[in-house]
Image 1 (cartoon, rainbow, N blue to C red):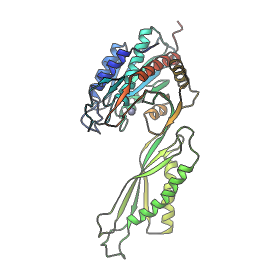
Image 2 (cartoon, rainbow, N blue to C red):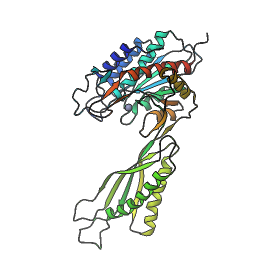
Image 3 (cartoon, rainbow, N blue to C red):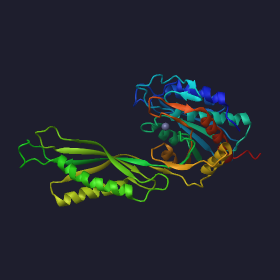
Length: 385
Ligand SMILES: [Zn+2]
């Protein structure tokens, strides 16, 4: 089963020419592209259903119905892109030297076009599958994943393949993260009044010195076999009103990258222990530790049915066993896994995600499309009747 090159290229170029900037990064939303994708799904014989988490923030789910009794497979892509500031021709969709250029070509309209080309390949081959094949094209992956969360309130599947670009490697895990605020409290006073002032910034210094030791311990702890060790960094530090005033508060915004198995509570506990120890040493030390956003990590067993289907299909298409690995960055895969859907990641080659020149390689995305189609046959089961 092969993917239709011309179909893939033209579909990808049309998707790139349809702006879908996440409103957090500029003017736009996913409404227009969702409509375009829904029409394309219907042309392929799928039923298409639109979900709007918020006005204009559209996701669309297409269903290629099976004959019944098989497992349901969801192919996943996100519709939104980051912004285009500084890009020369962000929506050109230019085809040059086997590459399609433009914002979102690589991250990840190439993956979406591969999902559509896979369904077309299934249709063209006349293969009748027992289980349904879904394509979920969702809004807002680049920011808060409202699209994925909305879709999962209405739609489920037995397995999912996330087609984020992975350079043809098979992803079995990714890290999660937790954003944490630590606030130290002091007492504001005129800069001359050391007898009255309590310096929140210096107290934050004490906290940060111990946090640095904790950070070293994290990176020296036994690494997760797929995603490496956990880590943290202090992204933002804010405290004080001016040179002549004792700072009454200081806030550190910390990002803690989590490995599979770690929990928010487990991540906060050592930070709270540092604050408690400092308070026990000095009654003027007071701090609060709180999580503001947590996104879970993701991991799937290497012998899960959807993983075996993808690895088998990749072997057939590529002629070699694909590399399996974990990824340090976060994906919607975590939401799929949390919804009880066995999930694996594979996507094509390219470059320039979130950069000024972005392109997707056509050949590898065609291979991804062929892998998706074959994996669907293996996972959803050929129709026995
Ligand atoms: Zn992406």
